[in-house]
Length: 148
Image 1 (spheres, rainbow, N blue to C red):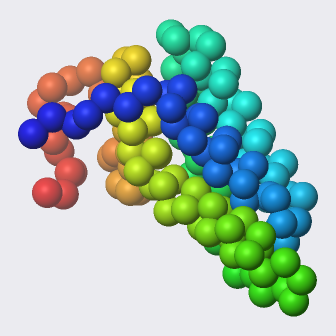
Image 2 (image 1 turned 135 degrees about the vertical axis):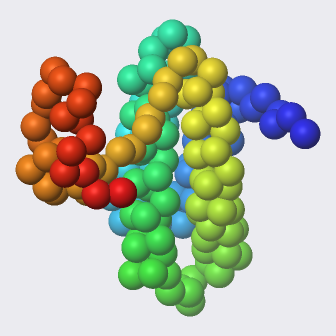
């Protein structure tokens, strides 16, 4: 089963629209708008420079960070006001929908990062022995003292 190709422009446009609608009722602080619109500006950079790996990687990492900050914002600032409950409900619904779509968007942005030739392998060298830090030219001494 092949993963469908989602256009980066569509991802940026959908999240921009949902962020604008999420900020309509002014129940979220300005840090929510600044964080999301800054990441979307990086997304515009990734759209403009089709061959840039850095732009796509920064957009991906920004989306991951905004998932965490959105959860914090919603947890702290969510309260139902007495005035204009319909506007609040719509605004909160769009902000929550944006948050729910972000993991899928991150998946598709990661696929685009891989298509552009990016490889992000995290490798933590947990071998702390002295032998792992020594380099030798001899093939015979390479396996002496190693634990397997």
